[in-house]
Length: 282
Image (cartoon, rainbow, N blue to C red; front, side, top):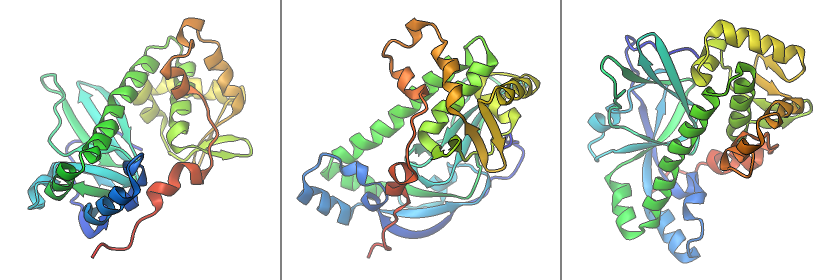
């Protein structure tokens, strides 16, 4: 993953086909009566779009779709969202299950800019007026969308807390532990996070300069806590010792503790619901 350059020309997504949203994300019908969920599944149809790797402006969906598109639901892939202010950059990672507004984002600071990049080929479901029509009939659909957008605030709060930890090595382990919750899979030596993050990219996520990250990663590798691989980052179980050294007040049953723990999960537990695409809706 590289830092996005705002001077690059954003790529346009290619609309593929229409699918049933509840086939892509069955969790949306969680706790709903089976008969009602089946009817909602049949009628909640959304178009899919493929975004090639490279710069991407989500707002183009609003101008290219004549059906009132207002958000994008990430099905597969990875979107990198960056805020550039002066010479500093902060980064958000947006993956499967996340809802991304398509309205142009504002940095909130004069001279700042927010840009997006698809770090790999990314498939999205376009939420438009057809989804809104379904949500008027089944309000729980909109409630599920609000839950997903609310997760942004939780993750941003956790990331801000990580960036304020005094030691960069602890920041890196905390970051990788959080990423393992979403993308990690268990392997014999620990948890593999299949994101090829550069030292510079990690720096934008934890609030540190690249040389400092390089030194910290080297120390963590020598201590057998972290290994950088061609297919991502391997977080060893010994890395959790760094988080356990945090002051007790930061670990007393808070939600952040659960976010930072390395919790082994199988690929099926994490990815199967979102990988299962339905046949094209008719």
